[in-house]
Image 1 (cartoon, one colour):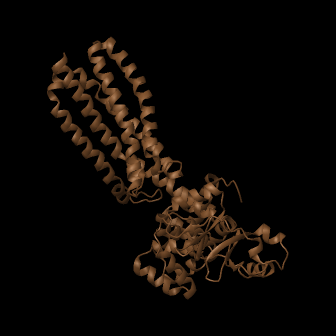
Image 2 (image 1 turned 135 degrees about the horizontal axis):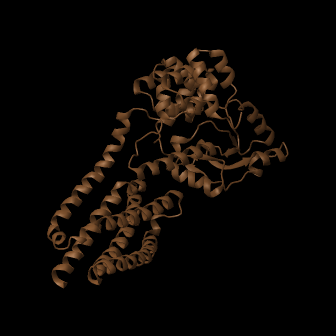
Image 3 (image 1 turned 45 degrees about the horizontal axis):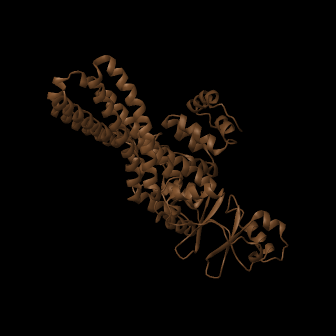
Length: 450
């Protein structure tokens, strides 16, 4: 079913759940795509979710579980036994199974693994050893690899044997005698070749591959650059150990995009589907504390210029505009750099060029707004104070742009997520520096030049 109007069917589903009409519920949802069932579960209340999920056949339930956000999945699984969880996990691909088990309590996870067949448990354990945000953390260990001496007919027979294990087959990876990746054969080439042809004669030996420790964002950029639908994962000796498919990359892009936006909003640990007010508050408070204490510093800065503000009360009127222009300029520069670093369009080697480019942009912007501000203040209070504000605005905007571009690049150099730079950190920093610049110039001008 496509183009489902969830708003229209949701009241019916809620009513059927209240009536505990299991038969009618199954008639509605059993033919839906797992992603559609996941969306329905997201819109229901906690008890309703559990009731509906428990009705699903195990095979469908496992697919739906792999689609759910962590807070919702935790709710679904919290009352289930190890046997029930293991039966769900057993139906999943290894990467999805590892994701579910990694979110369980350590003791529960161990007991669930004990319930799985040895082969499945070993696959999941291997994946759990890899960092979550690396190629090893998102790869699946189900793949099709054949020796270079295998023929086309042998390979096709092998595909038929592995059909139940592999949901989607895009390529056949070709390996040498030491299990090292040496090439790939597309299904198109496989079908068009003569049955007795060895794979080494039709394979592509220049395929892009992913190393197991590569950051998932770099993997996504590799897929984007080469228009890949599937990529092999190799270890340091180039032994083939897994594969990543485009559906994994779509999840990565969503996760990385959401993470960057969360950092920029100052709520990086917050799950959209989380319902606990305490957990959500705990995720936001640390970042708001950065802004809070930053503005406390601003208060001390303002206090130290008390004489200047008393001498020229009008100077206080323009503090908000100085802070706002500095903060906004810094945020613009940081967001552009963070996005460029994420997509691979900007790298560490571009630091000098990028800073110079941001400086040139900020020069144009600062001249534009300084001129406007001078004109406004000239007719309000005269040329002298207009010049003070124009010079201050010019310096504040240029300073903010350089800081906004420099901090994400510096974070990237030290392997810190550059999106952190776009959080309240940069706004607060530019507020403090902007006020210092403005009031220092005003103090000097009013004391020594007026």
